[in-house]
Length: 281
Image 1 (cartoon, rainbow, N blue to C red):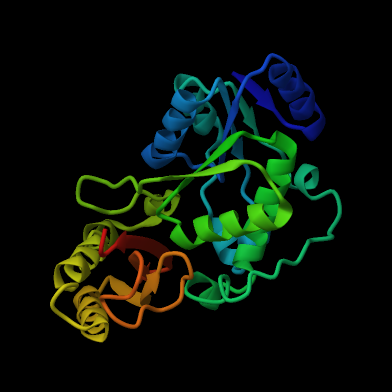
Image 2 (image 1 turned 30 degrees about the horizontal axis):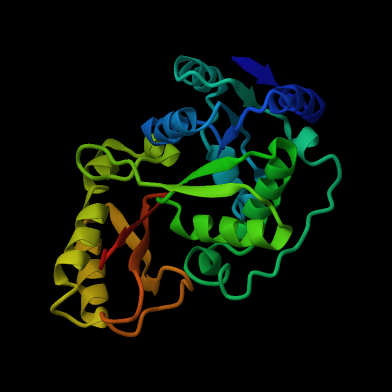
């Protein structure tokens, strides 16, 4: 496995591989890799001739400096995991390599980055779009793999790729969960013992929404789920929305056209956890 730190080396290596006719998969990450990331890597390995993984904690997508400082950085163990998973190359640049100047593009995503996560984390999705655009330009992958846990991010990445004319196929991969239902996340390592025991209540709440879906109004579902999760003293719901998959706009009724997705953000102490679940598919 090649460990690459600069764009120049990455470009040179990829040009040689592409000249051999190889199809390239790409898994962008911020490190602190867990089984969810490795499921993306496994799919990239299976569907392409070679695949590249990036490990870069992107400062542009953190609107809270404390959250950026607390984000786990485990590069050595990440590299070991990727080597065992048959990764062909890992791109792990520093901030200066990714952002040689301070100019940052501003995207117009309409309402897509103003709702849910965007409402509570202003600027977050612009930072995501900027870094993914840069990575796509550097890697030029045939396919790129993203977990559905970050449901709104996946929609933003698709929109950015369309705006920028990237020909990369964006592959959505299922959310990987712990045995108790908690969505796998690099942030989970920051949970206290009590918070970790309470956190599966988030997924139970989403499952409750699915169970209620055919018999209750959306407002009744939302009220019930929020109350259920907030009954734990360790958890506090920041938002819970039921939205149309493509537009991310609030659904008006259970029989709204298309797939409806329940999206939630919950604080466990200072740790912010997100999750989502399709309700009618």
